[in-house]
Image (cartoon, rainbow, N blue to C red; front, side, top):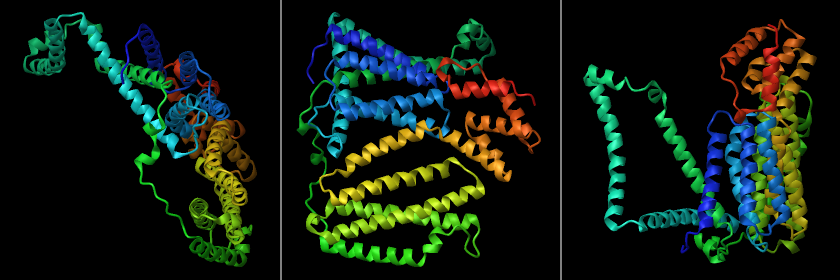
Length: 487
């Protein structure tokens, strides 16, 4: 990549340095809370100041922007352990997808594998830009020196890189070998000994790497790539193989025959509210739930594969009927699995895994409903809908505060049967602690509850004062309630 270093590039490098420092302060100083929202807001301000072009792909771009802000805001308003870790990876990926999307031509489709190739090409382009920029910067730095002086600076740098670690090892050995030498070394000013040089080194390194990352990516966004530069077909073998419609129809007929027979014979087994003889709630729900969901996923895989690989179906009404029957059968299985899991929750309580399983089955029902429409309307795109639905689904899971729903459901269940798993609630975030406080306010003599809350109070006293980076509304509210709780 050929370019010249301009004054504006150095000024923008300083802006990215500020962004890198903010990123280090936001993500490497304790638990993340308000800091994520502050960083993302700052990043987008820098982005729109830099690109200064008309934003493309406006509708999908706006949807992704809303999703980014909602996911980032969850760090400020909620305190969910699961999504806290997931979003550390998902939000940066979504932001990168978004900024490449809105700076790409409108004619470029984002719902295919070629756009993934574009994302990869942009990363490679950013890495090449950073490398070239650093080389050009060094060359410009040394251009004002004569050759001998430049060589001496390079040699000094190499000497420092080798000598400093070696000096540290030697001083350590000499201190171990001679007590007098050790005493002399230890008489250095106390503040020098208290400095954590290793931590400082890694923090500075993180700032440098983040600065280069932001600088490289933002600098290449406006650079247009030719389709040949990120042609996905170049990286894979192009094939024109398709599934034979007769073979596929045979498979579908066999599968649907089994599903119809199974549904007819086992109809009462599917939807009975009671238990079959010889089964506990756990055996009944678990045995039915996992098998039915697994079979449903197999059906979805077969269905999408047939829709993409079997050609000439638009005139084959029988094939479409088989697709439709497969979707209906899958819907029946999902409804049965949903009912079984509800029975299990009624018997054993609510957890994150069980609630997410419920949500996932609802998502699959939406997917199958759209796929049924796609069977009869050929022009619709499956991948386009799947990606948008998946993003909306994931964002909703973050926004609805799953842990709060779990706490409320378990407290409601306690009102009915006076059973609750306080040990599970204690494994949740501050939302779970809030649930324990509410339970204590209802029944102070609940076994082991007072000791559990007292232990949380003690741990709270031992914790350092919360920094601005970790500020969270839920956390702050529960901490105040826990501090004022009389045990």
